[in-house]
Length: 298
Image (tube, rainbow, N blue to C red; front, side, top):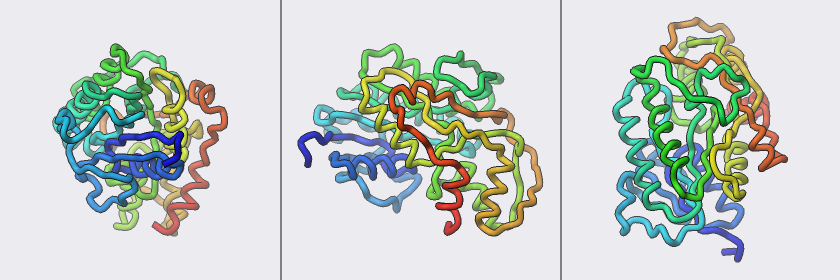
């Protein structure tokens, strides 16, 4: 191990972002310990030098993790995916808050914690900065089970003395994403002959996972404290994204519009001014470029 390498703990190491993070950290010479309970990807590629199979909610057990040995802790573990927010709201909010507190209360090194653009969903400021006010319409909507948990944890960290950075990801995607997210779900539907779209005029700013993780590592290695948006400023409609996926996979580009879930965000695009101050070279690849490169053989 190189003399300038770090000892790093990654929770949620089997997830889409977690696997890419482990890959990039290992490639630069860090020693990586991953933690994952395997609920989403039991056959995930083992990239970390050491992988601990357990639930993050159990990390208070000192026999599982020696918190003193790590230079950085990336806490990614959470139940994500829009489908899960609507179908299992109780599980989402309970798991995510408990998991966060299990890490926050015991971590002793620099913490990089992943929040979400859902925090600022519906804000009228587009692109959306880190310092906009947060509000919720219809707090009883099950969609906000994920958002509320992240709000609780952001507040906890902001009022703590921990050395930390909060990463608000905006629509990070990969060809290997799990069910419950737009890209993977749309591809699965098209393969089944279902050409249906919810909220086709809504917009998103998709950022490929390699670029998002690269930016997160730069934020982690900086001295920045607090919230940083990570994402692309290329805004694209759900319809245009679906048509590009269909064209790349050789399917017809004709979609039927079906009723969407209540609470869907009409526009999403980050203001990345703060990120560019930390990492001026950040230049994410376009959605079209990465779809044509990564999706054609899915």
